[in-house]
Structure formats: structure tokens, C-alpha cells
Length: 235
Image (cartoon, rainbow, N blue to C red; front, side, top):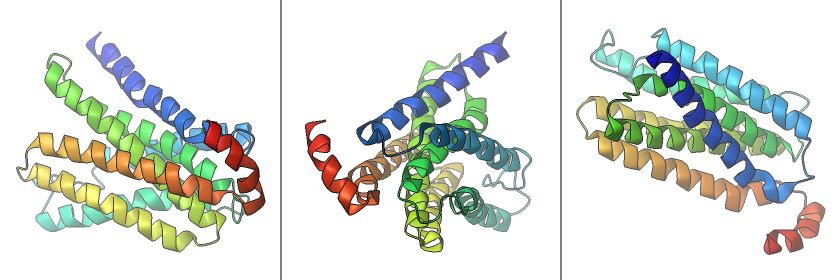
């Protein structure tokens, strides 16, 4: 029964925020993207998130010095997780059907949200201790921060693919992700978990804000941007 409650809680905490964030990111741009593609990329993101999480669960990557074979493996995992996760997103968003198209940024957002929801559900939600409300609350904040960050990185990579600069923006996304992994590693070394929680939510929310304010509007073609400008100011 407890496992069922934990699974339900993980689903609610992972996927409900993702849907809310998708609405926040894209409600101003109704008509600028294909709803069917949005759904497909979101589902694809969930599948990729499951793959990424599985690699960590099977300990192909391990940032915890207590369980890793040696410290060097932790360092490789810090880099490897960031590279692998963002490479998965880039692999999809750089497909021929998405290359050079302005709406790829929107599909990158949905891909990242699906990725973050599934990834955080599998990797973070397994640590939930429902009997400890304080710990669970902090873990929920971490999940939300991770979802926000993956949504932002998906949008960044999508934008890079839309302007035919996928490698450049893949590099940006990997470096941004790398910093989060470094903080996770220092948490294993003894840094207070509360600092990690605060950092994760602020870091994820900051990049989420940057994408909404700068990347999404910039992704529209100039003619469409002018047509939407009046609507965007009213909303």
C-alpha cells in the first residue's frame, strides 16, 4: 500500500507541475505550434527521461562517493550525466523535421518538461519518506526545480536547432546542467541539503524566467513577432 501511495505521490508531484509549467510557457503563443507535435514531443521527453534515469539507477553514472567505485568515477559522472541528458534532447530536436523551424523552441520546451517530469519522478521520488513531512517537502521543491531546469534546457536546445546552431546551444545546456550536478556532488560531500534545495529551485526558476522572457519571444519570426506583440502585451 505504501508503494502505491509513493507512486501516486511521485506522479502528482512530477507530472502535475509539468503540465502547469507547459501552460505558463506557451499560453501566450497559442496558434504558433502544432498541438499534436507538442503532445508527441512531451511523450518523447518522458521516454528519454526514463532512459536517462535508468542509466543512473543501473549505476552507469554515480555521483555519490559512498557508492561509486572511486572518486574519479564521480567526476566522470558529473560530466557524463550532463552530456548524456542534453545529448538525448539534442538528438530529437535536431531531427530533420525540426531543423530551422521557429516552433522547434516550443517543442523543445515540451520535450524538456516531459523529460524532467519522468526523470525526477524516477530518480528523486524514490527518496521520498512520507513519514517525514519536512524531508518530503524539501524533496518536492527539488523535483520542481529540476523540472523547471529541464524545461529551460529543452527550450534552449530547441532554439539552437531552430536557428541551425545545435552544437552551440547543446554546449550551453550541458554547462548549465553541469553546475547543478556539481552542487549535487558537494551535497554528497557534506554540504547542507537545505542549501541544495534552495539552489535548485532558484537555479531552475531563473533559467525558466530567462527562457520565457528572452528565448520564446525571440524564437518567433519578425513578422509573427509584430503580429503577436499587441496580444502579448495584453496578456
